[in-house]
Image (cartoon, rainbow, N blue to C red; front, side, top):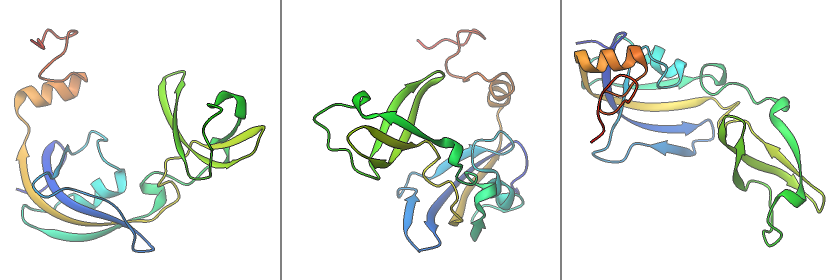
Length: 167
């Protein structure tokens, strides 16, 4: 079976940057799974996996535009230093989580002084070309329950809006 829309795909991967730095990888015995066509992984990787078969390996390069996008200056904000705990020595590169209008948001510190913290809300990999070494470990068709859950946005195991029970 080849990877196509609505395939359930399981694969092992190592993700590195142009510098060669490995920034993520699947743990042994814990491959990543996703369903093709439902925006569960970055678009450039999904596109390159299409047509691959179980057991196949590949080195895939995904440009920033097809991954986490380009870094945007519009996502850099000034936050008053008083909004942070006084006892924290805020340094560039530190990560924080804040409550936004749609829930928690993460940001990294670009710079900080006594009055202002420059917060970068871009994804940490925005603007980066990504290099994936992948091995497809399994491909299968969706079950009817999985397909139904994906089309309604519900989890097949637990969803009060469609009647599936958690208990």
